[in-house]
Length: 137
Image (cartoon, rainbow, N blue to C red):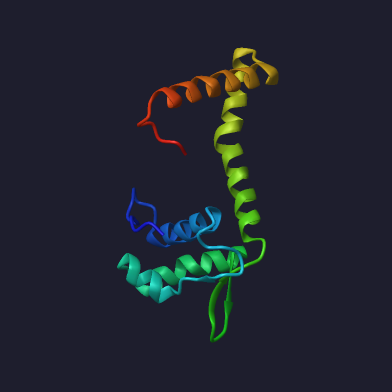
């Protein structure tokens, strides 16, 4: 996991939960594997263990992690799919809905929007291919 935790004012426990979620999403923390303990997270990020525990407890409540008494925390089966679905919904609400509202305001239909997305995607691929320093990801 990346060690930059402190950001814009998002509570630390939320940032901890997001870092663990990111590790599950990108596969560095696979389903059914042991997750970092509260103390490991606290030590790694130099934060209070109670703060790390609050982030972990969010993930337990969400069904992403499970506590196994005396053994540790583990990623649940289906956690990645649950997170993908959650992120997909948030993406739709944050980006697709406003996009469609603006398209509607401009009199653009779904096919028009799809054509614009495909056109921009081609442009971005060409730009990225032409610039060897461009980030791929």
